[in-house]
Length: 67
Image 1: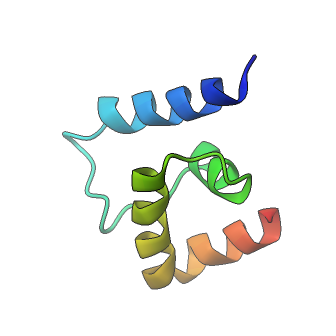
Image 2: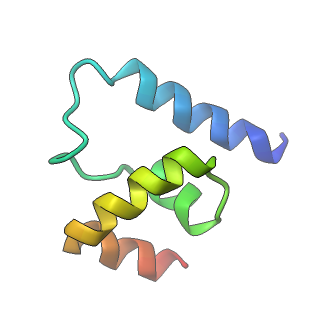
Image 3: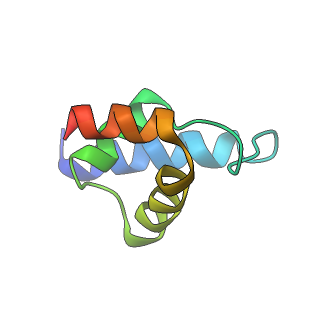
């Protein structure tokens, strides 16, 4: 397994569920939070996550515990 495998998994999950998800209101899942905490996200995904974490206390608390 390489570091890029985790990124690919996160991106595939996000893309597969994109049509039915509303990123503005849905919480980050465990894989997404772990990837964020490990700083293993591409720049575009990291930017989206930072925006979500700025508005979501629940996800921010979990991300800070993982970091």
